[in-house]
Image (cartoon, rainbow, N blue to C red; front, side, top):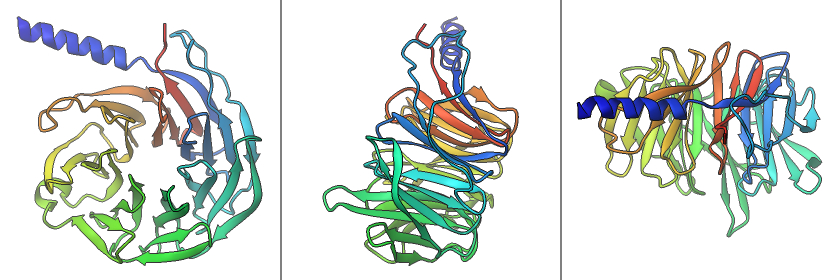
Length: 346
């Protein structure tokens, strides 16, 4: 009896959590692959296969209702033909003063952003060291030294480049992966993690010239199972790693304990992106099955984890980003949209 009541309560809580509504949607002529929030949460940048780059205003959601009708966002800045190819990734620096994009034209562009005018200013910088599609990037910013470093990776030579955005010069070219790099993520100003089609996950420290640790051969029998790594993310404490895979699996690792926690399957198709909520109580995953799922991470992570659909696209879901402080997120899709989802207040 108590068990049934508990199950009912859990379903009710899941149902409540799943009532995200579409607040605002960008519609493009082609698939939208990339999005990132400005660190203060008031803006977000969107890059599309149509080569279009937009910076949009984050809308007011304090009075959002269940019967809210979504509307186009306020576009503050727009550049068509921003790259010569599709925009695959977008990233803001930690202070919000730089925004970078990577493309299948093999280039990275980064630009200075003026928060007072909400416009890109000055000359854009183009980086040309990659010899294949730039699939992902992340900033490693150090506020005390005012340094701005950008890690980037993708197809081609399978190297990860770290560029000093002050001098526009590459500082490192990390080798080690033997397949295309699918995902990069940094949680402090010296460390980042990479996931690759070679089925490995590697941790990098910019103070040394090689991977400091990796999850590969040792973990394959129970964890990777020869499935390409398509997404990686680390919680804000640097203790928990989650990876997404082409076989639709999520794998949780205890980084400091150097151990696998569990492998589970929240989706029915390849996972494309994973993100922890700001406090890491929840995790979002998006998949080629067109859904975005929320997984509750409160409790024993070795037990079965409950995942609930919180949003759905009409085609493959490609990228997701949590708002820095609000319980809202943006997802992008092959259905040519980028949608902001939030919980109604009434």
